[in-house]
Figure 1 (tube, helix red, strand yellow):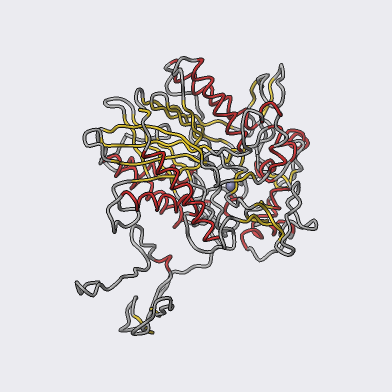
Figure 2: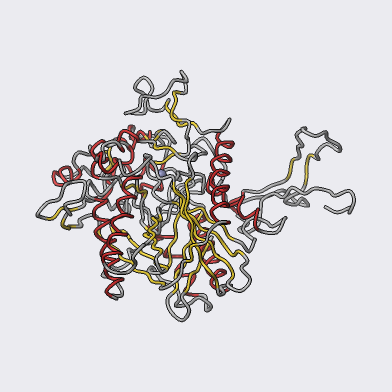
Length: 574
Ligand code: ZN
């Protein structure tokens, strides 16, 4: 779902919200390559003005990230996922660009009270009491929304909002491709605005529910329970009798699909209210800045108002490392990496790569303290990099509206600090007297989680996955403030490292192959081998059997694997 915003005869950017797990550098690179080979969009988009943010659904096809750690569950890099996502982004941006017209943008904000919960509340409590006292909840309940209308007719063109909640209404037992709660909210919104019968993805009106600071935020609002006893889990460790696999989050529905529907519907309903009542006009300068920074060793002065209390000298970030709590997983999906304990597992990809993991150096252990290091991913480059080191940060502006796009899952308080400090810098630099700042999570690359310095001390899942060490958040904020100041001073482009490489030839893929399909001579794909019952009663299940193929041989982008049609008796048509 792409939104192209342009100030006439000036700057332009595209914000794309994708129903996938997270932004990925490999995908961003390829999408830019495609946009720059199309004569209609050639030279318009680069890293600076294209933002690709993942909704963080956990039910999207995997294998599109270029780093080893994120390829384990998909048995390596999956070219099909990677190419399909990049082509979809390219197509959506090209279409938005080609059909752009004079528009009015307005904004609104309001609370969605009953659609999220903090899944690491004990870590949140480590943040200073005075800071916590500024907020009524341990998650952000506010949805911030942009409304796009045709400037001449006033007709709605699109809606884009940011709200913090994980795409984990469907847990890791789900095997179906799904946009989870945010995808469902988009579906409802687009169905409501586009003409009846519009196929999803083909309507003119586009409604995106984008990811914000959802790092510690779960949609499973009924809390965590032990699967065996039905009693609440131990709060600090999220365990049942000391075992984490038995503790799982529960949504408000009767099953996980019902929960996805309920959490999606709550976001949709509030978004529709806010959309209908949006009146604050957003206009003025369109601008953007972007930087690539090496977070394996970024050295900077720590300000006095940071959680770590400030120092006279510099602090540094560390090469990426995962703490022990990473292996346990979260209450939204216990331990998908349980194979870590054994060297010989049923996962062939893990068997092929696990011996290459390095032991952390003394410096690394000290840098990551108090994190007990489970996977020293930042210092391994075999068979290729295990995690990101050079990460992007991006700032987009429409008048008083600022989007800070981060390649990470920020926790609630991490996101609040980032937004507050960016707003502060914007005001001080004279860019805007009353800025609105939103945080676009999981954008452009995937650099795991970002917890606050205080939350990091507890080393729950989010702290254990804050891979660049205790000062990661402050390093992001330091660079965000730099981008704000560059925007104010007119420095363009901002200082940056070159975009990291991605070498597809190096990628390993151990997924069993599926090249060949056949249905036999004289038969056709789609042939029905067992016809459904001729007549059925309401409530009865209709069954039919078809000759089919492996969906990987033709993923039918923009189409569908199955259409259900209804025969209309009066018109005699399907
Ligand atoms: Zn997550």
